[in-house]
Image (cartoon, rainbow, N blue to C red):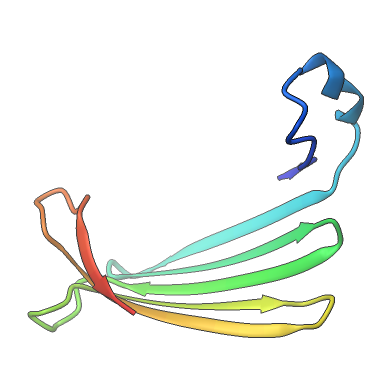
Length: 105
């Protein structure tokens, strides 16, 4: 995906038409299913030349009765003071369609 992010204080579409050929946002996303219980994803984002990568792994149907899912994520800022962060989440659905979840970091 390529586009332009900005002009938040300009609600008039016609006033923003000059920005149609500008770009300051790029996003590339890839996902892969790992068997029936895992997902792997990688994402690259660039907004106004600040670049980020995000990688995630989700394991569903854990063999633990208290939790059902494990999600691990890593986020790297690759430009302007490079930094790294990560998170891990354990969660469990509390309704039949798994729309409501309880989780912990």
